[in-house]
Amino acid sequence: MTSVSRLKAENITVRYSQVNVLDRMHVEIPDRAFTVIIGPNGSGKSTLIRALSRLLKPNAGQILLDETPLQKQKNRAIAQKLAVLPQGLSAPETITVSELVSRGRTPYQTPLKQWSKDDHKLVEDALAKTGLLQFSDRPVLELSGGQQQRVWIAMVLAQDTDILLLDEPTTFLDLQHQIELLTLIRKLSAEFSKTVVAVLHDINLAARFADHIVAMKNGNVHTSGDPASVITKETIKSVFGLESEVIADPIHGKPYIIPA
Image (cartoon, rainbow, N blue to C red; front, side, top):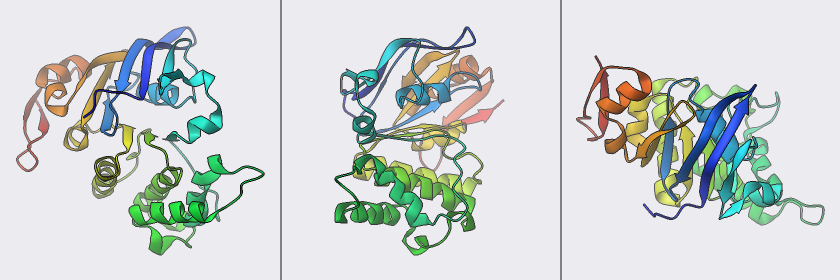
């Protein structure tokens, strides 16, 4: 894992109704790795994703992308470097899989530059990577929940950015589809050198799939590092207030939490 970070937050504060949701927070996102953000409800996980993606402007501090503050960069330039998948997206009723995935190419369209062969190829590649080629002409809403979530992932892949920010991408998916989606995300990072950041609630899945974990508490980073150094009984007690034992997963060797 490289020590250089293209995306970082420097002492950011985000305030809602005079309450600091993020409080002078500093975090650096490792490049070309899969980072998972964990923490209890209200710790600021989704707020951090929104701030990193410029969907939310910090009240203080700054987000740096390639050493330049986001607020000094144009939206189109950011969208060609960084893609974000927020929570709770809903597809239009009749839109097909390929039509939705094609929207990932919007940052590259201008009045003088319309749809091209390169755009078509990137959409096809995104559909292939997510296993959706056979569904390209199907309405998105006819697919299962797991398949629909893969369509949204394909859309941000078609955006062809080096950095992907995913806010709770496994929400509402059953365990099988969570595993399938996280396996895909892990592959994108490992095989296609994507920098991926995701918010997850399942700590054991975070430990299994992540290269790097950021554990948040009270609007700041409590600890961060590789799964073995972060997922300990002391951290789980301090961050989540939960007594537990942490053992090695007998299949993957990663930390595995057993609540007391």
